[in-house]
Structure formats: C-alpha cells, structure tokens
Length: 264
Length: 330
Ligand SMILES: Nc1ncnc2c1ncn2[C@@H]1O[C@H](COP(=O)(O)OP(=O)(O)OP(=O)(O)O)[C@@H](O)[C@H]1O
Ligand SMILES: [Mg+2]
Image (tube, rainbow over all chains, first blue to last red; front, top):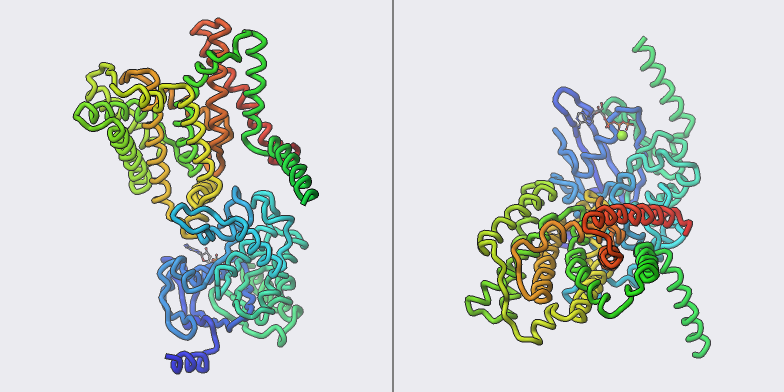
C-alpha cells in the first residue's frame, strides 16, 4: 500500500491533469483539445476573451458538465466526475461568487453549514461557542477581515462574502479551488481582500487554485503560472516568472486586433 | 467576584435593552402593549381576570397552529390545510376513544393521523414537485370533506375526567402553558439546533443549502408533519376547552388567523426569516383586537372591517420597523 502511494507521488506531481478534453453542446464546441495541469499547491491563472471557454472548462473540472472526450486525472488516477457533489467529495470545490452562502445566517453558521459541531445527543443542539471560535481563528488565518462573525451574511460586502465562501471551501478540506472571476464587479479594496486570501493559500501550499480573471494585471502577482485560452484551446502556458504583464498585454492586444480585422 | 457580577448585571440590562429594539419580535410586542393601553382606556374592563381568559380563548389554539406554520413558512413553503386538520384530529381522537382506546392514547393516535396528513403534504410537495400552495389547498378540501363524512356533520362531546380535561386545555392556565411551552420549545429548535438552522438555510438559499448537502426534502417533510401535528393538537386543546367538537369548527378562519399571526409576528412568506415567539405575540395581538372591539360594542359586520384595517396598519408599521432595523437605524 505505502509503496504504491509513494510511487504515485514520484511519477506524478500534478494534482489535476486534463488530457485531450473537449466539450460539445450540439453544434458548438467551446473546448477543443484541452491539455491542462495544476500542481500541488499551485495557483494557475486562466485568461481568455469572452466566450473563449473558461467557464465551460471550470464546469468540467467541478463535475457540473461531463466532458465529451478526453481524460481527467486527479492525483494521478483517472476520474470520471459524476456530479458536483462527487467532485466535492474528492476535494474539488467551485466557489462561484457567493451564491452558496445563506444571507439570513451569520458568518459562522455559514462557515459550518451542514458540518455544525453539536453538543452530543440526538437533538442536534448547536455548539455555537465552538463554531464561533473556530470560525474566528480560521478567518484570521486566511486574512479575511470582517467586523464580527456574528453578523448576517446579508450585511457584508460582496468581497467579504466571496472571501468567506473561499475560506469555507478551504475549511471543508478542499484540495482544488476553482474561482470564476472572483474579483469581477468589485472595487479595488474588495478585490484586494480576495487576492490576499489566495496569496495566503499559496504560502500554505496545501490547496491548489485555478482562477479566472479578465484583469490579468490584477491576478498576475498571485499566480504561479498563466494559461491563455483562445477559442477552446490553450495557446499559452508559462510560469509567471518567465513572462510579464507586458507580454500578456501584447498577446491580448494582438488577438483583439486579429479579431477585429477578421470582422472587417 | 463582586465586580464581575455587577458587570454582568449591567451587561445583562444593556443586552435586554438592545434586544427589545433589535429583535424581530419587538415591533409586534410594542404594538400589543399599545393596543392593551388603548382598550383599557376606552373600555375600562380590558385588563381583568375574566377578560384575560377570553383573550386566552381567542389566542391559545391560534398560537399553537401559528408555531407550526412558522416552521413551514421559514423553509419556503405554506400550509393551508391546518384549519381542517384542526377540525379533523379531535374526531379521530373521539372515535378512537369510542372504540375503547384510553383517551391519552386516543390523543396520540389523533396526532399520528395529523402527522400522516403532514407527511402526505410533504411528500406531494417535495417528490411530486407541486407548489405547497396547491398541495395544501387540495388537502384543505379533502380533509374538510373527510371530516364531514365521518362525523355526518354533527358535533359530538368527548368524555374525559375533570383533571384530564382541565390539563388538555379546559382551564385557561393550561392553555397558556401549552401555547407558551410549545412556542419556547420550537423557538429553541429554530435557533439552537441543526434542524432549525437547516430550515432557515433552505428557505434562505435553496440551492446553496442543497449544495452544502442538507437533505432538503426530508427536512421539508419533517416540518410539514410538525405543522400538521401541532394543528391537530390545537384542535384537541380547543375541543377540551369548549367541551364539544364541531366538524364545522376552525376551518379557514383559524388557518388565516394562524398565518396572519406568523406574518405580523415577523415571519416572511418568502422564507428564510421567521420567529415562533413573534407568532405567539402575533396571535395575542389578533386576539386583543378581536376582544377589544367586541368589548367596545362594535357590531359583527363592522368588526371584520376594523380587524382587516387593523391588520393592514399593524403590518405596515411592522414591515417599516423591520426595514429600519435592517438598515441599522434602530
Ligand atoms: N450550456 C451551454 N450550451 C450551449 N453553449 C454553451 C453552453 N455553455 C457555454 N456555451 C458556449 O460556449 C462558449 C464558451 O462559453 P464560456 O462561458 O465557457 O466562456 P467564457 O470564456 O467563460 O466567457 P466569459 O469571459 O464571457 O465568461 C460560448 O460560445 C457559449 O455560448
Ligand atoms: Mg465565464
């Protein structure tokens, strides 16, 4: 047993790998031949124009859509995700905005939803004290800054909510976090809070992250590697240390020019 | 030691003060107090032993029904059949008792019967995916017809010992204790247990709750069953209070009163938000209105108009107070 696991980790350093994955919706084929990998504890930035297929790719990774073709490997083993729940059991968690939080409940009840510690017995009496203390400690660890864990989610800003959603996934032992435009529609300060949380995760090194963003200058600093998606294919894959915001800008500007010229 | 205890007393006092303004139940409580003062000034006899027992008559069973309805409302559903279950379950009890089952056991059987109605409401709503408005509207007519058929339309008198009768709602004190006890227990369930937390989560964010792994269907069914059983229990309490069971009793009036109690008490029809204690206050306020206007000598025709207007006014004040509270102004 021990032997084989050791072998795994030596032969395969990636947490997740996609090989020749494609996706068709009837006549449209938003993903053509995707080869993508994310290492343990790595933060991967996924860039691309509107309609490039970024969200579709995320939905395949989180078990929402089945792939039409190709193979997905998780910790070196091929997996066939049956559902979002199945993916979550493996530790793949898509934090899509703050949609999964319950506005009417306070921060710590949200953090522990469906995993609440209780005072023994069949009645399921909540151990609020413990939840509160654990939530406070965990949020502080992650650098999430909120006035109090007692407030209702509805009273927090979009950035705070998003940060709590991320913290909740990490707390539920997620191995791979999928963030689809987490800083979209957010002010600079709010966005900074999310990026700060991702930075902390990167320092800890036990959670891998794929982050989609339009504003690549904003996420550049928190990413280990950048992939660029164009019309369903990955056309650029480089470590952030081997590229620059300037290079990415040039690529995007050229792409935009090519697209407008083709239209004209 | 001394410092810490005086600190905690001061802390408690300020917490109570804050509580009075910030809690959802606060506005309905204040409305109730104002109404009591108004009716005491205008009728002189409002705050009297005899009148309090009239209030208990009006509010007791309604509060019990409202408590269950709040749980259903919070998880985003609605139960319109409670008034008919209120009328049905005393008959189940009566016939079981007639057949030789001891009264206490007959009550349990009647509650089980009410629970089956809730189970059907829940199953149809969650598995057949009918809106609960439709499910329970159908159930309302179905149960009403069933009660009329088994009773032949005639009232009956259940026989039970004096003490038993008093405990099961015959005495006003017992009625108050039941209503308050049920409200307090359910408020605890709602705010301090996983059951309550998950009920709020389902009503607040159905897809979020589902994704978190909460068993939505099971929990909704459980709340429908609780609601029906409390409706049945309310019917039984009123049966012993009145001394007879009328198949035409309760019905839609008590159902609407219970829903109105829940809503004016601070429970939202849209789900996710609610309070059982608020519903108890709501039932008391409706009883105060009904009783106060009766004492004032208002005729039966105008009474309904006044009651309707009073509900609208109370609700308007309540809704706006809640909005202020949400904005953190109060
Ligand atoms: N369920 C679906 N059925 C049919 N077509 C779809 C479906 N989902 C996505 N598509 C198509 O796939 C293509 C890629 O969509 P996707 O949402 O992945 O783009 P994106 O890169 O996330 O874009 P954006 O930056 O605007 O969010 C689009 O042309 C879209 O219309
Ligand atoms: Mg997208």
